[in-house]
Length: 204
Image (cartoon, rainbow, N blue to C red; front, side, top):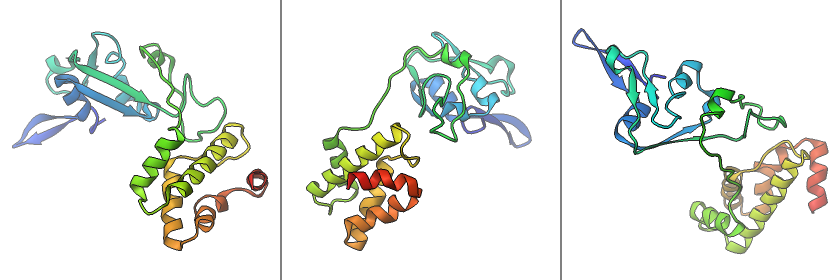
């Protein structure tokens, strides 16, 4: 809460208030993105309950000035919550570290959008920005394999998930070793359990 909302501090023996990032944006306007909000502490997220409503306010209950404990949200402020799961949480037990979102918060969210993976061409372009030396035809095959892994993960056939981070790590090791297959083995394949490797062998 100190970083997000703000905190009390001492200045020459006087208690003053140091605003957090959320207070600054809610006061002056801008885009406030809260990643994995269900993992916030209860007192932090309580401050946003009203902020998510139209014409809401940010609760700054620790502010030393009682008149400043309800900050009216600047109309130019947009608050976006991002999470791996929808609704009340992870109903398929894929995200072990994800907490459940409470109903009062869900009721205050005006709209929800699902954002899936990038298209193959866009992901190849993104990989090229990180690892320019990988030939685009090889990069395309790497992305296609990554999409197979995503599909298998969605079906519950593989526990290890796949993201752009995996693709970049694979690319780095592939360039370092000069061996694309070895790079994949070192960065992803070796972490699979034996029964999950059967799924991968079927692709081969």
